[in-house]
Length: 385
Ligand SMILES: *Cc1c(COP(=O)(O)O)cnc(C)c1O
Image 1 (cartoon, rainbow, N blue to C red):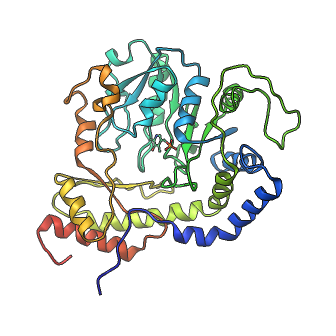
Image 2 (tube, rainbow, N blue to C red; image 1 turned 180 degrees about the horizontal axis):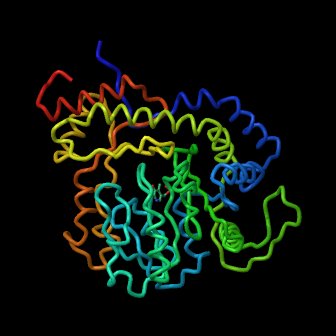
Image 3 (cartoon, rainbow, N blue to C red; image 1 turned 45 degrees about the horizontal axis):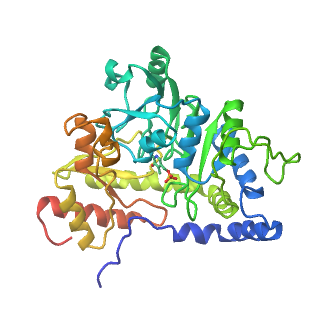
């Protein structure tokens, strides 16, 4: 019997578990007859505030719009320079452009893929107004170091914590180390909807009000249906970045099993670590902390022969993803910034070498062992696995 395939991502088991809860939420939506920016969204915002410790959570339609609205509400003016890492999902930098600013790239730490103060040159920081570090895959950037860097250089600190649900540093959830951060609920994220959704996190009430207005055509006041005193005054030209109640209901149901899922992924990450630690040719594995802060969104390894390894695994029914195959400074959409290959060596190396292996709530330890065996066989030239 050939072993069944191992998809890169799957969440059937999670949905089995949460189905009654989700069904109840959907029934409520139909009973209310309100499908956008309504009761379930308000309930989700409260639940996320409890989970993250944020004073304010503003639900929106995607992580990308959350970034755009956060940047605008934090006072970004046209042409403002925003320091961002050269290795990230493209939305980190495109959101800056969409908000009217200009991304300024810095290289990343080769182990954590995060921004580091030492990598921010005086030239890059010159005239910059914002610092937008990203927490990628399973590691937060060193926020104590970046906070003092922001203070020294007079920068407003925001976080692209789109991947960061559940991640905490010094007891503070990702997104709450500066003026604000975001979450993405894209389906494959640690807490994923059945489509697009996102949120802004902040402790700052003025920032929260501004984001809440911007997501809803610029209207002020709490315009959620369950808040009395609906306002229909438009103060800023706003976006339509409202969240659907269906997505909120999915996320509310999934939130009840989030920590369980995070613990499961941490166990699997440990199995990967044991299975891959001594494989020749695998040049980097994520560092394990062994602590309760071990929150893996993605398990990312590095190898010299990334594309060949991905094809080898694909032939054996094992799905992988390349995060991210092109560093941001070499994306055509940022060509106007005038960068060339060689400008950010760590970001470029990661883009050539990094491969994400399956990691999700349906995955079993036996399947991780099979993936490890296949990775090992590829690098050692054995053909059995
Ligand atoms: C997913 C992601 C985003 C964008 O979120 P969407 O919900 O897909 O718009 C932004 N930044 C990072 C680092 C991400 O991983």
